[in-house]
Length: 217
Image 1 (tube, rainbow, N blue to C red):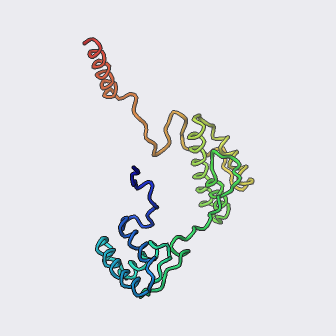
Image 2 (image 1 turned 180 degrees about the horizontal axis):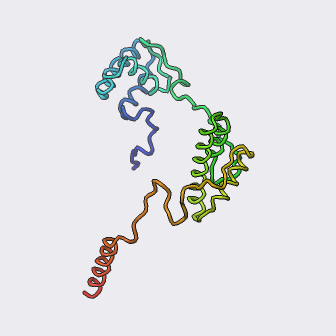
Image 3 (image 1 turned 120 degrees about the horizontal axis):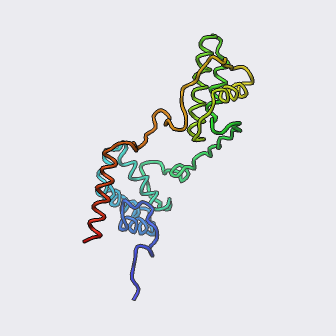
C-alpha cells in the first residue's frame, strides 16, 4: 500500500491557495475547448478570492487573481483573460549583481573611512577648520588603534601615521595632545560589565552557596 504524502506530490507554485486550487487549475489546462476553460476559470477565480480575502484591499484585486491563475498554471492555461498575461521574467526578476568593494587599505586597523576623512580634510581651505578636522581625525585614529590592538599607543605614533596617510598635508604639532585613551579605558559607547560592583560579587557568592548546599543534600 502506497501512502500519498505531500513530500511526494508536485511542488505547489503558490502555496497560499492550497493543493485543491492547484489541481483544479491543472484540470482546466486539460479541457478540450476554450469555452469550458473560460467557464471553469471564472469559478476558480471566485474561489481564489474567497480563500484570500486580504487581497480585496489590494488595488486591481481581480487583476491580481488572474495573474495568480496564470502563475499557478505555469503560464500554460489558455483562457480569455480580461487582463494582459504577465510575463514570466517579470514575475521573478533576477537582481543585478553588486560589485564587491575593493579597497586597498594601508592600515586596516584604521579602516577605509579614515582615508576618506583624510581626503576630505585635505580639501578644506579654512586653516582653523582644517586644523580642527585634523585633530578630530587623529583622535578617531587613536580610538580605532586601541579598539583593535587592545594596547596603549603614543600620540607621536598616531600623528606620524596621519602624516603618512595624508602625504604630509595633515600635520599636528608637538603641543597637541590627543584624547587620553588606552587599552584599560573602553572606547566611547562600548558596554562593559562592572567587575568592581559589590552586588555582582554578592550575586555570584549566593549562587556558589546554593550549589554547595545542593551537593551536601
